[in-house]
Amino acid sequence: MRTYIELAEAGAPNPLLPATAEIIVGSVAFLLLFLVMRSKVVPMFEKAYAERSAAIEGGIARAEVAQAEAKLALEQYTRQLASAQDEAQELREAARAQGAAIVEELRAKAQEEAARITAAAHASIEAERQQAITSLRNEVGALAVELASKIVGEALDDQARQSRIVDRFLDDLEKSK
Image (cartoon, rainbow, N blue to C red; front, side, top):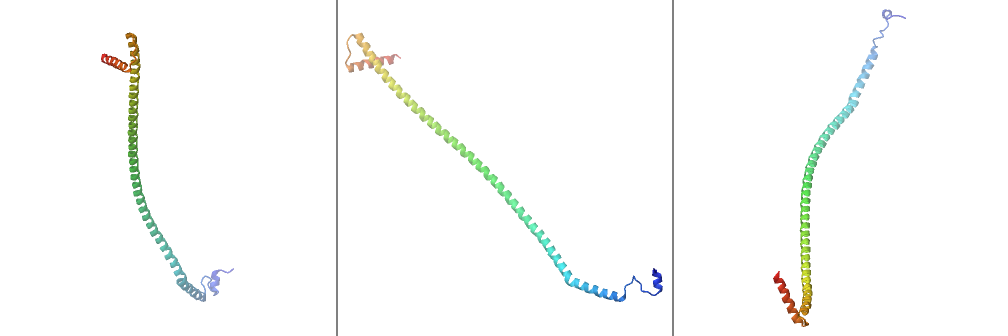
């Protein structure tokens, strides 16, 4: 094998340096590739980049709008909840008042019913008392007539006379009380 120095002395071309024709063809190919890339590929990349940026910015804008809407919805929900709690409190108070009114009405009806029953009982007792007095008067009268006829020794068959004797006897009894 020959060394690099020996090849250089013999006039052989340097293997590290390309040939001039290769440099020209490579430069033309690079220039053509650069122009094609610049005119075709770079605009597609820029378009994709612009679309991506727009999508990201649109997404951010939509997120901000959605966040603002969510904040408004939360405030509205909070107001509705407070309103519902106030309404529920009012309903509870109304129900409590209505319940108290119903209890008072039932109490009044019960007192009226008790008073009616008491009055009926008093009337019944008074009627029975009058009936007992009448019955007792008749019995006492009959006993008094019988006793008087035994004492007097004669029959007291006259009804008017019996009534007068009984009434006078009972009046005397009441006066003695």
